[in-house]
Each structure stands twice: as structure tokens, then as C-alpha cells.
Length: 252
Image 1 (cartoon, rainbow, N blue to C red):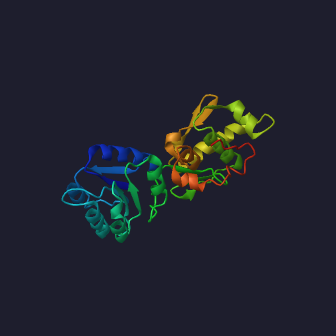
Image 2: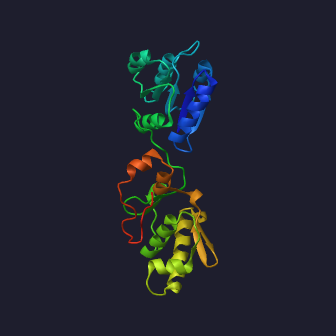
Image 3: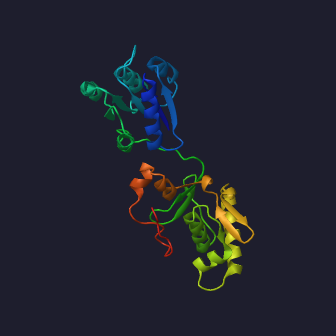
């Protein structure tokens, strides 16, 4: 995902960049320009998803720049950020996604991002994808990951729930069963390792002596994104979390 930010006032551009970074996904690429002419020239080959444009700028104003961007990509989301309300009609004529009056706030920018005219499709990052909202599921490249045992999947779910914290074998045994099944637990751990290796994600699960944990930097998880206030994850949460497991309680 790429976002273009153009404002000929440096302090305003810095403020805008700060607000946009908080509203868009962490891996979004921000292209920031003080000069609208350079912005038009240097992004000609770029696929811009969202453009935040000041309107009153020299040589090429924001309305003109928006038309250039729209000609390249009719579904680019243009959000005007200006100190003047009288351009609202012109902004509407170029089918803008939003119109913000300076001084802007983080919440205003986030609201515009959450309600884009053309929703942006987030491409998979290549990481293991984990869905905790509703039933717990694990995906690799969009395909469900099949564990050899249902308890292997539950063990993995518990580690995801612990968000990278080390979990002892004794704790896992207590969560999964009321009785001692440590020998069977070894089979489950081996199954997780084999399953993840088969999809090229063996570095997600770490086993150290009598404990194990998840490398959270190597998974994409809706619950983790929710806690970072990712707008898509916030919208996806409907009060259900790993519904097939009695121990699962989501602390937002």
C-alpha cells in the first residue's frame, strides 16, 4: 500500500505524516513531497492508493494534482487537506474521498482512512496468517494450515494467545488436559514443528528445553492488529475470540 502526501508547508507536512502513519497499516509506504510538481513527476510510475493533498500550492495546486493522479488511476483515494472551505465543490467534482480542514487531528485522519471511497486491498505479506476472531484458524498463502491433531492446533492457539510469552510444558499440560499427558504433549509439539515446516513457517514456533513460544514478528494476527488499533481489525471484531476453546478470553 502506498500513500502520497503533498503540502508545500514543511510543518504541515510533518504533522500530516505523523497522523497518516498512525492511521494506515505499519507496512504502508509514505511518499512525502513539499513540491507538487516533483510529486507529479516522480510518482508517475507508482501505484498510489491514497493521496493527501493540500490545495493551495504553487505551479500545480491540489485540485490539478488530483486530476493527474485520477487520470493515472481512477480509483486512487484523494483526501484534500486544506485551510480553506471554499474548495469543497471543486473537490467534489474530482470525486475525492475526503476533505479535511486544517488544523487536522489524528482522529480526523483516521476517520477518513476508515471510510475510503475505494477500499484498499491489503496484499498478503507472506507471513503466516492467524485468525483469532470467531473460530481460530491458521493460513499460509491464503490456504488453511492443517495440523495432524486437533490438540496441536489448540496448543498453537494458546501460544498465539500468549503473544510471544514463554509457556512451560507444565502450563500447556494444565491448559489442554486435567491429567498428566506430557508424553502426548511431545507428540503435539513435534506435529506443530512438522506442520509449520511443511508451509515454510518453521521459524514461527520456538522450543527451548521445557518451554516454547511464538515469534510474533513472523505472524500476522487479527488480535494483534486490533491491539495496535488497526482499523480493519477493529471492524472485524464482533465480540467472538477463539470460540472453540473454553480457556480463550480476549483482553482488548
